[in-house]
Image (tube, rainbow, N blue to C red; front, side, top):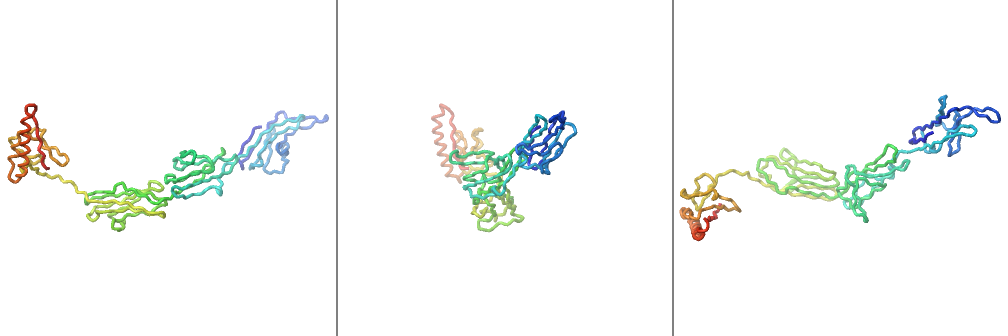
Length: 401
């Protein structure tokens, strides 16, 4: 005989093989041998040969007319668990025993298990899950989204784990990132395992973050204003102008909300074909039962850059070359190094030390500039005279762009 393990409510079958079953003699008389089934721990005879003795309609005995006897227990109950004996009434008696193990798959005790819970941010939450079954089920917790569970206590500080064992899950100093669904899973090796889903809601007042507080766009184009909102419970979100006028969706104003998590939403306002009157301040506003918040965005007109040919003048002499170079007299030899360089709003023009005649030959309309240029060139000429023996020195005249 072999031990049998069966789930409650299923059928259990014991098989006993007896070879050479014949008879035996008692006081010189031949007596046929019989096979009996006995519940050993209760010392109760269940069946003899093919006849059930006990008053239990769930038991039956069969024989294959050769050497195999079978005891069947239908719809097994916990009280059926124990030691069963197959016995042959020979002299001496022969027998074999086997154990019937009755197991019960886990089952959540809903009346003793927590339901969905709401806590304020920074508060504490205790989630409880209890299950029945045999053997006693083991309880584990995990987050439905697969993220880590944060357990905090005074001795070990903060601990993170994807799986936490125990009937009670204690969460302290709860943050909004811990909001979500938690799974209580019970298992005892008997399939199937069972679970219950508990939703933890963390409440906090709205918070608005504005990625771009100053937005520029040309007239006639489309522009998008964005606000990121975090709030729980779910908030009412809307847009308005800085004068308090609420914005309503129409063919020019398109508003939308995209959820990125249980508590985060991105608000967008698309303004089509910008008008001059659209410029100014806009507010994104979020309100829930705990509080409200607002963010401000200023929209301004951005002028498109136009390519214009601007004539630069040196000492009021008009440049007729058609580019942004400073005009110079034809008899002056200018190298590539003397090209202009813009820096900090100034135009640097490289001139040879002997080019002071360019400054002195300017028109009467720029007399002040001529005097400044002549003085500067004179100083350069004097300095150049002393330095020309060592190296050729270039002087630079600062001219307003």
